[in-house]
Structures are given as C-alpha cells and as structure tokens.
Image (cartoon, rainbow over all chains, first blue to last red; front, side, top):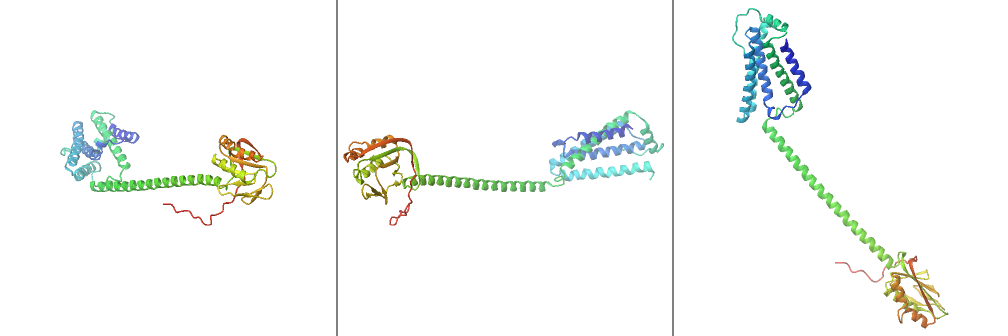
Length: 110
Length: 250
C-alpha cells in the first residue's frame, strides 16, 4: 500500500519542486530512470512470484542505476555515448517487456 | 532482479491484494522509498525534457554545425553593426563639417554684410556732429573725417541717417552747402554715426591737425558724443561687380 503512496508522493514532489536537472546529471538521468523502472518491474514480478526480497530489490535498484550511469559515462568517454545509451535502453526495454509479460500472466492468467 | 520461478501457490494476484491491504511492512517501506525516488526522477526528467527538446535528438555534428552557423550569423551581425556605426560616424562628421561650414559662412555673411552696408548694424560708437556757417564745411573736411574715423577702426558709418558709407563710397560737391554721397544729397549740419571703439574714434576726431582742427580752420565746429549704442539703419543694395571677378581659390 505505502509503496503506491511512495510513488505518488515522488511524482507530486517532482511536479511541485520541479528542480532543474544539474548539468553533470543531465546525460545520466534518463538512463537511470529506465534502469530503475526495470528494477521496479523485476521486483513486482518477483513479488507476484512470491520470491520478493526487499534487500534484493534495493540492491538491484541501486546497482541498476549505477551501472546504467557508468555505461553512459563510459560511452561518453569513448565517444559512443549516444549509441551505448540506445543499446542500454533497448536491453532494459526488452527486460521490462518480459517482466511485464510475466506480471500479466500472474495477474490475468493470460 | 527476478529470481527463478517457484511453485505458484498462493497465486500472485492474492499476494498483490494482500500487500495492498497491509498498511505497513519493512519491505513495503523500502519499496516505497525507491518508488518515490523513481517517480521523482522520472517527473524531473520529463520536465527537463520538455524545457529544451529542440536539440535533444541532435547529434554532435548537428550541434557543431548549429553553433558554427550561429557564430557566422553573429559575425555577420557584428560586421553589420560596424558598418552601420561607421556610416553613423561619417554622417555625424558630415553634419558637423557642414554645420561648421554653415557657421563660418554665417559669420562671414554677417561681417561682409556690415562691411558692404547690406545689413543694418548696431554697437557702441560715436555720433560726430559737424556744423558751421554756410559754405564752411564741405567735401574736403568730410573726406578727412571719414578717413580718420575709418583709420581709427570704425566698422560701420552713416551720414545724416540717410547714407551708409562703405568702402567704395564717393563724395562730391553738391549744389550750395550740400555734398553728394553716392548719389544722395546731404547738407549741413552733417551727423556722422560710426560704430567702433568710442574712445579711439573720439581721439581720431581730435587728433592734432586732424578732422576737428580741419573743420575749425574752416570756421566750423565739431562735437563728438560717445554712445554705448549706435544704430545704423541705412543700408545699400550691393551692386555685382561688372569687371572684377574673384580669382578661383586653390
């Protein structure tokens, strides 16, 4: 219950504070958000599977975000930041879709 | 990360419903915190994206090109500014130059107008009255007087408030007691108005063996009144020179 509340609270805070993204964070934030989304959907699937563990969730969330940022940083340093970002987004997108498919099977048995 | 599948009892839907009904648990709290962070970051990113999505998709090359074209445009505009500023300066100079020329011409016109008698003149000076018995004062004395006043720096002169005396004025004897100055007959008493330094003009009249003595020798009488303001209202129309032509300058 309070998980949904937390999400709503974050959204509301973001809307009302609407902080400017610091310049150094600008390239990492979109990838980090997608990576976090992947972690959340993975966690939801694990929860529905009955194997949810909050420690695993926290670690996967944080590590997903950090690795995504690291990849973007590395890509920028190598001069292939744009392509690498696209690659990360594609991979994470595929994972999100497969997780959502599992969630769907759980919830709708379809 | 999802782990591997496990036996599906109880069903996922039941777990979800139960979790939504449970008000608090540690795992829910951590999930809530992370979801809050996610929501916050997502919203911030969306808003930042809205702010400037014009160049987000642009590749580095596009951006460089964009910057270059901006720099070129700026250069062009700066060139334009320079050109316009130069033009403005030139125009200002021109205006100034023509203004100066105009001022010069105006002061020349004023000076020449007084010198040639075209313009009325006003200023400090003297009023010289020459009187005497009939046939005593004539062309001779007047010529001397005008000459001496002129030498003493008289800038404008008139006689009897009827004739302006200028550089090429001519005096000749007229019928009886009168003289003819530039075709106009004037008769005694002669009143010469002269604009200049009053003291110098006064001295010039009473110079030893000068005008006054000359007139007195002819039984006439000269009086001089120094005035702060002498008005010379007579003018003459300039006659264009018939024979003389100005030598072209330069």
